Structures are given as C-alpha cells and as structure tokens.
Image (tube, rainbow, N blue to C red; front, side, top):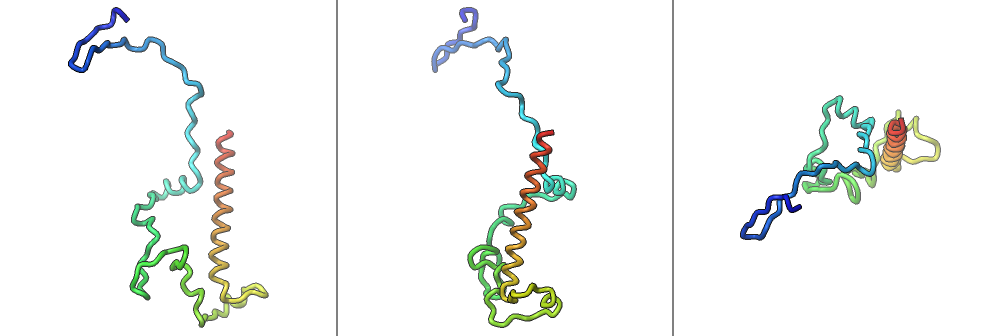
Length: 135
C-alpha cells in the first residue's frame, strides 16, 4: 500500500491501487444456456419477432359500434354474438354437436377448449424443456 502512487486533487487524496493479482473463483459454476422452447425454435426458424407494444394492446376498433373495444376479457370482441337472440344453424355442425348441448354455448365452449389446449401445450413444453435441461 505504501508503494502505490498517491495523487492530490481538489476532491481529496487518491491512492491508485495495483491490479488484482489473484482471480477469485465463483461460488457456483457459470449457468448453462437455457434450451429454447418448441415455440422459440419454431419462431426462430420462421423469423417470427415478438409483438410490438401497439400489437399487445387489448383494444381493437369495433366497426359495428364505431368505438374502441377490448379484444378479449370483460365485454371483449371475442364474445361477440354470444347473446344474440337469433342464431344461424349450420346443418354440418348441428350433426356433430354432442347430445344435450345447445347451440348458444358453442362459442364459449370453443373458447374454453382453446384455453385448455393451450395450457396442455404449455405443460408439455415445460416438461420437455426440463428433460432437455437434465441431459
């Protein structure tokens, strides 16, 4: 410490320390790179970029009412047509309908099934990434 150069400045006296002579080891090894998920691999292959801030907004212009409305959620545009008093019946879908179900609940059932399918895929993706991390 006495051999280090000392400099006087208006802020005070500065002592220049020598460079470190012994590199200190890390407590834990450097973490391995995380394996990309199935979606990340697909997006990289197709060149899909993350959505912009404007694309993430939950508002869309409703041309029927002429106002901005939510895309999903409370009073969302994805629920449009659920409370219509008149529902058009397609004979092909009517033949495929399960016994004991009404046409009025089809939109809601489809939405809920999409959510369940997405959650299943997320769980599968998490399992695959965990297994890839153990290898």
